[in-house]
Image 1: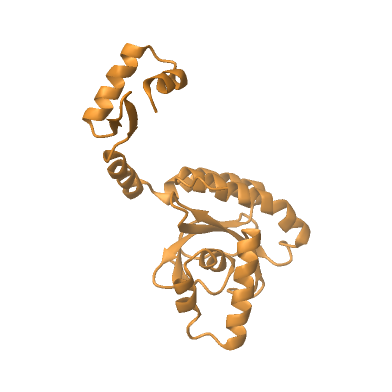
Image 2: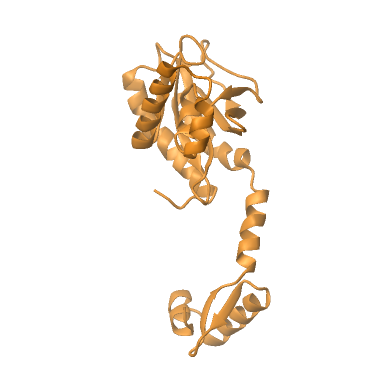
Length: 223
């Protein structure tokens, strides 16, 4: 942008704007080119972005959102992150206060090929990752997984019943980072008898909203 555009957007006096631009240029956050002079982002912005990526804690930024989701449904809410090469790890959980509930210890690891959380993460992985994760599956298991992956890519969520724990149902949606990579998944888990169709219909918008909010906080700019 040129000075005129910047001044119009920022509504700053021109001397103040020039001082700010000079300071940002000195720090490598801006550079200029052309005549009349125009400004663009400098090389230090990439370094700043990488520093932010290293410093942010997914559990920390997710916690208040997950608390609100839990208060709305009072079923167990779980946060999973990738656990290479082909797994996922539970890093945060808010357990349901109801007498019958499902819970796992922090650090619990499961494959990406079973359960709602695993499948929503695998669905947005690379084709090579999907292929490697499918190694060792039977033909029937591979066909079912491919069908489930296509459904996730269309719906942006998945519901699974009894895939990890008998009698348990989970509904999960993926989390994305600033360059659209999969950061993890949020899952709501409860007994099948409570997680019926009507309950899932009420829960789903809250789950989607929660994952979108966390993804935005992690730098995701997509829809």
